[in-house]
Length: 389
Ligand SMILES: [Zn+2]
Ligand SMILES: [Zn+2]
Image (cartoon, rainbow, N blue to C red; front, side):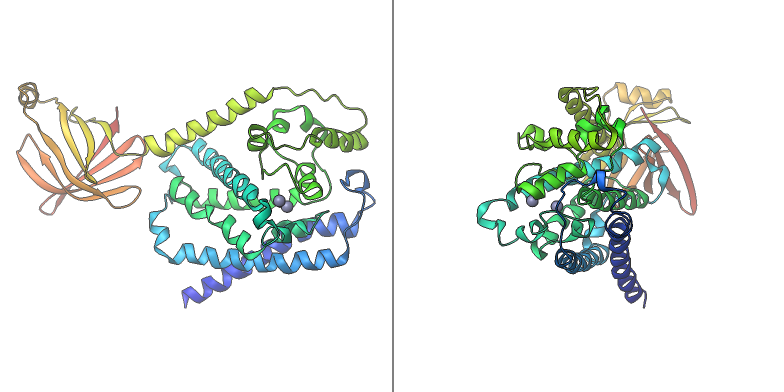
């Protein structure tokens, strides 16, 4: 029964989400207060009701595809390979926010290249033209895609959850940001505040004018959230900054337009964050490395061989063991553990050199810096916490 309830919930949530995130701004800007926001309007010509109907129909279709794909991820073996972590304290709090940013960067890079590929003359009219029929888009167009395009853009989702450790709340924040930003990109009105133009964010983020120009001109500005790839690949529309400034000056009067940080620094800033994130994602959360048993003072170096983990004693508190190590004797205290999931390592043996005893054991990563070691002596369980050196 639970599975049917989940199916209904996932499909309903996706439809409701579209009608709130795209529908509410449409109501405000297009139905209730178009005159109030007239200075914010990017293109002066108006889209027809026929356009809105088409955008809604195709967006409902895309929402259904997203729901089906979500259910596939939930019930296929894919979910066993993900790095999703349930305990918020598995990583430091700053990782929670950085992981969302990283997920957006990965999606943005994927979108840029797939988007450019779909603009190839041989495929454009078969797939991506449907989205471009909204030459002057409204938020209702934010999910108006051909089936193939919807599936192609969704394929990045499993890749993101497999490579980046994400908490379920971070996934929720990522998905919400994605849909809200997409609705903003198709809003047809520029709502960025006055200060935005002189901040670093203007150099890094795309805007509603940015994506609107892509719809108007059919080329340039292929990026989703960031200007990064368009700038690096020199595909950014040369009219972008001029058009953006013209609209903001209409709203706020004459503005100072110099940017606080040049492109080079903005690029370095982004790569710094990516590098930092990858370091945490792929390096720190590994069981490999040197660990210290705070109680006994022993140092253990854990390495991986053929998918199994072994820990060698490389320094000991006990003079007898220390002597053995200095004489060149290999003392293996962790033998043949296998990774069960992101945190648990099982099915191996622990060797206690002092008692010359081998027992069954389990290892658990509490956080990237702490490893809990469980050993069973018959019915008695002994637990230790090792700290990364
Ligand atoms: Zn396009
Ligand atoms: Zn678009």
